[in-house]
View 1 (cartoon, one colour):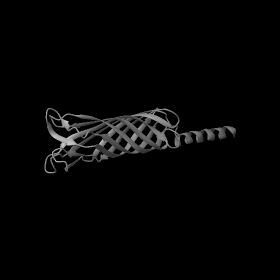
View 2 (cartoon, rainbow, N blue to C red; view 1 turned 180 degrees about the vertical axis):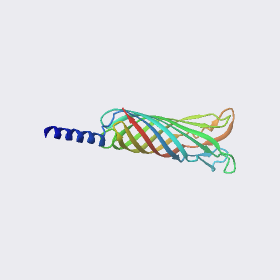
View 3 (spheres, rainbow, N blue to C red; view 1 turned 45 degrees about the horizontal axis):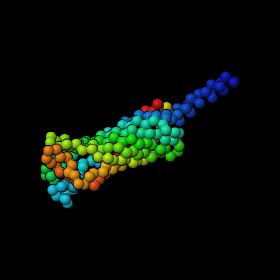
View 4 (cartoon, one colour; view 1 turned 135 degrees about the vertical axis):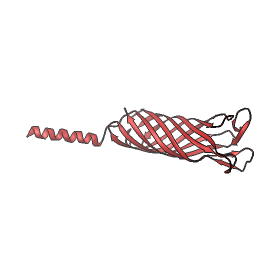
Length: 203
């Protein structure tokens, strides 16, 4: 009788462990998302706005525990999009937008790996046109977002995030110039927003 009770208690403990897996302090996450927003002003036509087309984006983050509810995060993201600086009738110019940020996560409930969290970081943005004769530009930037982490197993979880990005642009300098400007754009700031889903591996 006692042996049967012991086996039943052990089985319940194992089932409970899998139902509420232990949260890992460190994690590596791969994200897929859809990013929109962002515009510039044409230098030759100050009232003409040039928009970045919405498109898919791919990201990765490495998080390591700072305390029970916070992590330090290195975040990298890549988007391939297009701009049409000469108007809708002209061919679009390919543009890649890449972010590299150092920041962190703060879980509202105080336990890393479960529930809602605030995420953010500071770093650089690389804007690289896909045409010869145009140079890549590097600008300071930041991101801020909200997320929710749903544990699937002891080492796996899903992350759902909404992030906003802000890149500071020098209005006194034409963008994408190298020995002459083929595309001359200006702006105060580049803002983008993204919805993301990530698969996170904890360790």
